[in-house]
Amino acid sequence: MTKPSILIVDDEKIARVGLTRSLADDYVTYQAASGKEAIEVLKQHKDIDIILSDIKMPEMEGLELLDKIRVDNEDIIMIFMTAYSSIETAVEAMRKGAYDYLTKPIDLNKLEITIKNAIENKKLKMENIQLKQKIRENWDTKNLVGKSEKIAAILGVVKRVSNTRATILIQGETGTGKELVANIIHYNSPVADGPFIKVNCSALAEGVLESELFGHERGAFTGAFYMKKGRFELADRGTLFLDEISDIPPSTQIKLLRFLQEGELERVGGTTTLKVNVRIVSATNKRLEDLVREGKFRDDLFYRLKVVTIEVPPLRERKEDIQLIVDYYLKRFSEIHNKKIKNISPKAMQIINSYAWPGNIRELINCIESAVVMTQRDHLDIESLPPFLLYGIDKKKSDETGENLFEIEKKAILDAVKNTKGNKAEAARLLGIGLRTLYRKLDQYGVN
Image (tube, rainbow, N blue to C red; front, top):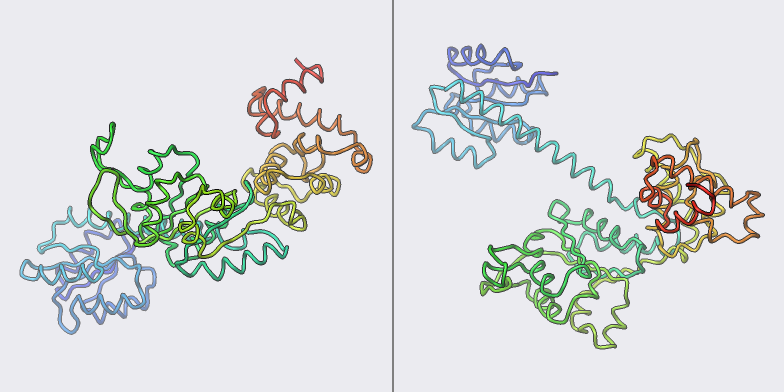
């Protein structure tokens, strides 16, 4: 493992040499007698992790050195050494980005702890940057797979609105990818480094939903033993994604409307007005226009939510995208499950194209993952597909494929039970069928 490298900058040779000897066993060390010399060392050695520098030096003091290296070397950790009389200067250095300061004479044990903490802090920062980069890659616009006109239109809108703070309403059937669109909008927006908080409004009862969204004060209701921040506060300087917004009850609709109008809220049971900076993206599988006409949803809230509306089409209206989606997730799941699957056979693709996909893209993705897990070949064929796909194929299509679908289904089910070591519930999940259906099929095949 490569040792971390430290540049020791001090105009006092005895101090410089002494520190070098103390650190040489655990670190690659360099020396400089002044700030100017330190800059020359940095030009020759680009891999320096830490600069341990005196503050008071001739020609160029520590603060000036800090200012100069920050221009091109933001990742270098700066630790200052100072006499008690210069502590105010050291504090100023920390305001400018120095990691810490130590008072002279240097306590070597404290120095060792400070350096180790600084390196660990740098490591965590780098991991955080890499994680954020990976997340952004996962939610890049390329993940909205498709070449149809409707997908192209959605991509156009997403690219235009992502860099704004506009409130967005996403509508579409269950499983069409509304949450995917919301993720892409957030991670390509000015608040991408901020939190992305999700709330499924249909999964929470009225009283619970209000507390989850706006928080509550201690004693606000029975069981409120402590103050709790709501999702709005947690999403400050980020995005709040309200899924199934159509299920929000009238009392909560009023509070949400007030927030959208004024950017203010109060916790349940509280009197203090709080201001938070949150972008609202909402989604629903119902037509809010219809609910407004029926008097089930406030029209003023509807207009506030739909500054920009994105309609995500069902899979049956973008059939030309199915092949692209299959290829994309075939590659992705092959990597995840450590499989070397090259492609999918034309016959299997014919069955996939013939299916209605009532569960939309979510159902298709689950189907592909199941097929990838179940196959024992280097490609997907009919026998790799979940049996539920075969239920929707009539005899004419069966003849077109040239396969005995009954035998294919039987083999797929028996393979699933075998691969899950007899775990029927897991086998049913992989196959995409109910547990009772699985037992019925096993009985039909005469399998105990």
